[in-house]
Length: 636
Image (tube, rainbow, N blue to C red; front, side):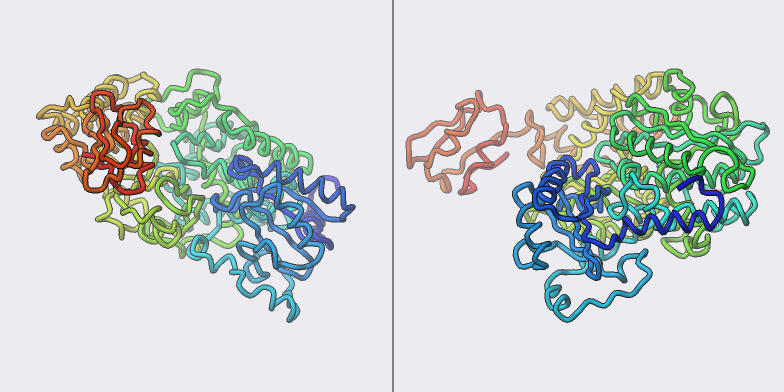
């Protein structure tokens, strides 16, 4: 079809999208976001394609984004007319033929689906579907998606389309209500009304700063200057974080629509999406989405015959962590080295090329169309006071259900880690969780009931950040964790200001010495003093928040620092310079497995007699402990 100019055109586009979202024939979707690809999803997709062609089956094959539960990848969903969506987890190439057999026969007795999505769970199905008694009988034992612990407490607003639509098909996005908010904004709302709605919603920046979005938009609208810009920050650099990547890969149009609405409200006619080059699929899907929106007239001149024009350019970042900071990102867009500048110069007044510029991150922009569609009050009623709506987190580390989760603000850490995440593997104890990326803080098990919102995390010595959440068990050394994050921060500092360039490096050196048995009295106090000085004196937020991992671990795990320094011991048994592996005589059976597996041959002993470890040769790799079936190896 041609350009979309009217509401009627939008309805026709939605109808076209419904034809592929719910075709009148069997449809099979494969999750091919980066998480799925890493698990082999592309091979599964190609095998499905070959199998359908070989059998001459009229089946609609589609790629989609991630549903968030990475432990199920590769994830394949089957949709048959009049039946619920059936999701099959951990599908490999060898399971494709049996899966097709089941689809053809209508059976689900072989490969068991991981879950199903009924019509009431799918927001876009308008008609009520009544399955027959035979189908209902077959569905027994297959849980609904909202019955799975991983999804039960989630509320998908930003992630509403991920795993449901083909991100390369703009019509499917429109069929899910996409670009209707933009039509409403341009046809029946003033810029002031849009900003008021966003302000009422209480939406705060999801990139880490947590600044009220409506207030930022208003400041940029009021700023002097005829030329203004809106920017999307897709430079996600936190270790273990991939919230923005999944959104850009799985639902790029939600970001574009949010940006166009924001641009109209602010008075901007040009926008930039800044995305790291290490995200090739996100770059490709965003570029295609921009081209499709432009082709249909949803970007470019006179959008919806409103007289408003706006276009977007995608800029690839080179991977510098500091470019996630607003001013460094803007100087990078200008073609200069990504270095921050003094904060007293506000980017809403002097941003790119010293012109008013409004920067929000991927998740913030993706929420905007929903707020315009459902109203600011609706959004404000979700979440907690001063932290409304939902937040997307990447739940990683020592957790059973690794994946991407979207939860209402105010949910407790305990609910995320145990109810959604399924707890700690191998029955180990929960020790701490690090939130907010490498500059975030570590929250101890004692605060497991802490609400997850901007203010509560800040008071606990951490922060929301962009949404990384790394879970640690009782085998984690908190001093080593602080050292690890400082190693990252040292390499990612741009070096422009002395407090960050020199201070972070010196703190890392102290941590390195402590972990290697060279810690000395006064080191803890010195780290605290330096951390506070660096936070106060650094030019940008990278340096300002860099001390958090150290200050929070000293605050909650001071005894571990003291053990490293005073007793030259690592309580968690992690720091190699401070531990040794020994064999318990009363438990060793002399099986010899540890000696065979030792990479440096430092274990000796006759068969069926107690073995010993040569401490001079031992490299403390831990292999012996891993292979011992009798718990005869201990770490001291």
